[in-house]
Amino acid sequence: MKLKFVILTTLLLSSLNMIQAQQNNLNTHKDSLNYVLNQYYELNLKVFQQNSTLEDIDNIFELFADDFTYVHPKYGGIYTREDLYNGYKRNQSNGGYDGSVVDIKIENSIYGLNAITVSKRFIKKEDGKVVKGDKQMALFEFKGGKIFMIKEYW
Image (cartoon, rainbow, N blue to C red; front, side, top):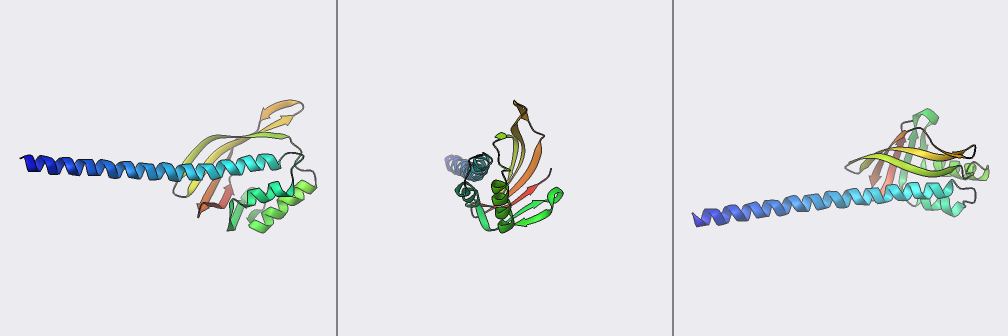
C-alpha cells in the first residue's frame, strides 16, 4: 500500500512539473512575440512623427524576416519587404509622416503558435483635438523571432 502511494505521489508531482514547464514555455513564447509586436508599434509611432529619419525606418525593418511579406487586400494586395521599405521612404520624403498619429492603442490580442491577431486604433490629432481612429485588425506571423508576415484586415 505504501509503495502504491509513493508511486502515485511521484507520478502526480511529475505531471504537475510537466504542466508547469509547458505553461512557462507558453508564457515565454507569448512574451517574446508580444515584445516584438510592441517594438513594431513603438518604432512605427516614431516614424510617423515629422522629424523621423531613415534610421527610424531601418529600425522597423530589423524586426522583419528576410522573406517578410505585407498583405493589405484593400490597398493593393501583397508587398515584398523591399516594396514596403520603399513605401515608408516615399511617405517620409513626401511629408506623409507629419506627427498627426500620437499613439497606437492595442485593444485586444489573440495569441497563437507564432502568430498574434490584434485589434488596434490609431490615436490622432485632428483639428486640435485628440481622437480615436476606427478599430483595425491585423494578423502578425513570426518566424525565427522576427515578423514574417503582416496581414491587415481593414
